[in-house]
Length: 278
Image 1 (cartoon, rainbow, N blue to C red):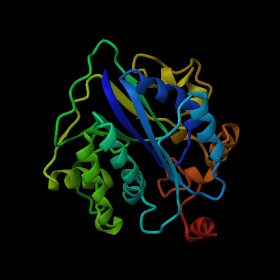
Image 2: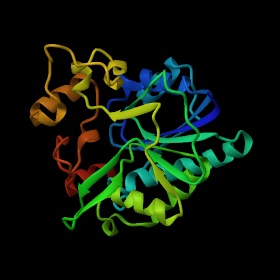
Image 3: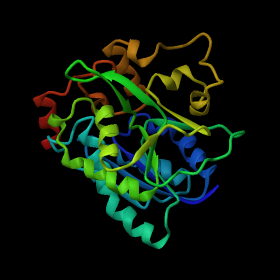
């Protein structure tokens, strides 16, 4: 086990109340001490009590809990993670000086990590940014490039600190966020790797609360959904059914307001943006 690790939880809360027990247990299984740095968007109906309740149940006090105001430039799949991690950085830097972190996990509320108990933890190398998955997607120019998923980034503190500098790159200057993440890391002189054989991490959707027995089963690659499955996967649901599930699980609609039609309940329009500003 590591002595001391930092976990950045960033973004919309989404499925957090369902998967948080599995998240806390995962990090407790790999380190003697875990410090959490929480940064989320200050949306109009942010249910602040969710964060407080989940951490109180786990008997954990986050090192910081920041609600970041909406900003046009950064409210994108590229700028959002960079901005939210950047807000956590000063708090992490000060704590790192007192109790240095062996590893930093830069991740999201709706990600369920899973540890393979029979595989020992592997060292996190200097000057290396780790991901659980590389991508091969089309960019906005129609070219296919290798990228790295950013829902679970693992590194030493100095790499995390340098990667926060990606905020200087405007979303309009990117071609596809996973590709740009990999390219930015290489420009900093870092190696990139997916050599994390002792773990995996997957994004969960609201429908998984019905499809799986628990978040622990969802994260386990050997487990299977309930049979018969009580609900389709989120991506296959109608908008009406998605909204129904959000209400069922007490999740804000605005958490799934996005221009990614595969998961959205509503596209991100100027009218939606005005809700943030007001």
